[in-house]
Every structure is written in C-alpha cells, then in structure tokens.
Image (tube, rainbow, N blue to C red; front, side, top):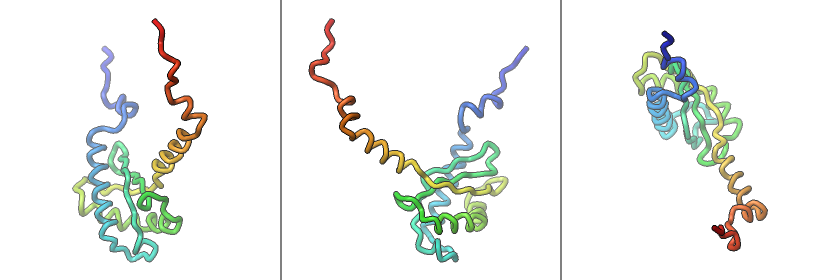
Length: 142
C-alpha cells in the first residue's frame, strides 16, 4: 500500500517549475531596479550590477541572487552596500511581483564567469590541448 509521494522526491529532482518561474520574475525585477539605479547609498549610486541568476527556496520565502559587476566581481564595498540595501530591494520586489509573501533577498557573488575563464585557460595548456586533439595515426582498424 505504499504510495510514492511527489513531495518527498521534489528536493532531489531540483527546483519546481513554480520556483523557476518566480525566481526568473525576481531576476527581471532586480535587473530593472539596478538599471534605474535610484539608491541613496553612495556605494551603489553608480554601481553597474548584473543579476545572473536567482534561486528560490521551495517555500518561495527566500531568494538567492547571484550578482556580478558587468562581467567582473563586485568590489567588497559595493557587495556590502548591496546587503545593506536588501530591505529596500525587498520592498521594491513586493511591489513588482505579486506573491503571498515578499521574499527575503540574499546575495552571492557569481563565480561562473571566473570558473569558465579558468577552464578555458586549462584547456589551452599544451599538455591538455594535445590530449584533446585526435591523432592522425589513431584510425581504428577493423
């Protein structure tokens, strides 16, 4: 009589469609807020912040936004200012996105670009590139 529950398996399967959709709406709203750049904090006044991804908690009450400074890391003072501005950003999100609860915003630096650049450097190393290119004498004989 054991019935499989779709709720228990959801955590291992990844985010739900609702989580993905709401997170994407939050990302667009944050990007629009950063584009307007109407911050009182002098550290954020001229900041060029890119929101690369937003991940939602299963209950949609917490959102983690991955941010960078237009292809590079945010300076520490801008990152600290971003965390200080989280309550203001939360209120702006509450106005822009209709949800039962305004989500708490958490910010993380986006390291995906750094990782991609590192992997590109590794793949261009002569000893790695040699292993990746096919040898002309390695034709398979049948």
